[in-house]
Length: 194
Image 1 (cartoon, one colour):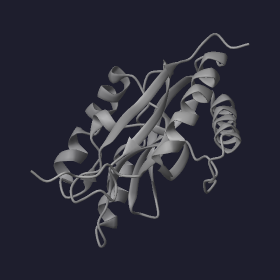
Image 2: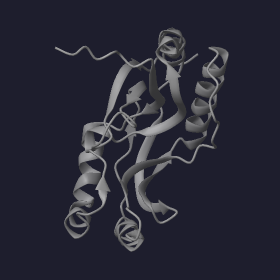
Image 3: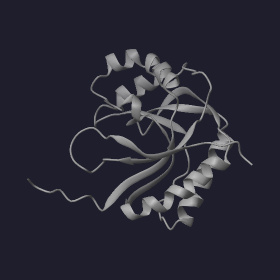
């Protein structure tokens, strides 16, 4: 038997996840796009999320430091009221659904997550928050499919929902061939706020 050493790093981000019924509603709106564009690299529905801060490849020792700080942050914040709305694309390569609702609160939460990560000693490349939920990616030369799929979502307006948990997520990207898979490292319920 061959022992496989545990990785010394993990790719991590902090995110929100829509509830299953909101994801099912969007998946229903995407049904024809799934059929018309099967060659797109569609994200698994169970992996749909709204990234607040992409922390990148971190030493596994950084994760235990983040956990209590993220737990305190979630407990101190009320849930946000959000919804999935419409569709679009980034650079004709990435299909997304937009986010509506308490965008001011969403930006504030993302700023707090970034400040918390830095306070925990995690250096990461900051990117401005562009609230969206990634649905699919196009391979080179398939950009027209992304544009058409985005246009098919133009009139989609999902029902509003409340965020339930703040998620610390790990991914297997760069860990071998195949579909990118995400897993919750841990998730914390939002509290009542202060």
